[in-house]
Amino acid sequence: WIALDDVQKDSGCLEYTVGSHKWRPLQHRMNGEEKAPSTDTDISDFHSSDESSYQEGMSYAAQLAGVPGDQIVIDKVPVKEGHAILHHQDIYHGSAPNRRSQHRRALVAHYLRGDISFR
Image (tube, rainbow, N blue to C red; front, side, top):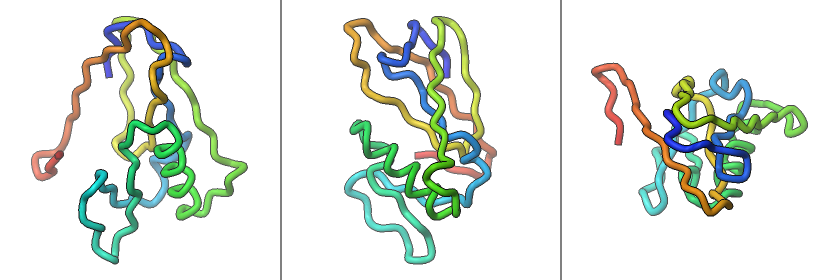
């Protein structure tokens, strides 16, 4: 994730749930998709633009992982223009809406093993 503009806390910087990459992987689905097989746990609306929905998804994932609610730490990460952030594929993350009049642009790249598909 490479910031093309300065990204502050009020302009929708990335937010990470600390330690969530160690939690049990969960099956995600996009709005309107069929429910995941019953053997998987799904978090609907995780990729929604609604600020509360991705935070609710992170809280739900923590609950399923046995992490008490008072131990959930969400870290907001402001980034300067031209700086980059790399993170583990399984860490729960999201961003709030940009509440500033300036742009919040970024260049994003996903690196995956050859046997993995990304939609």
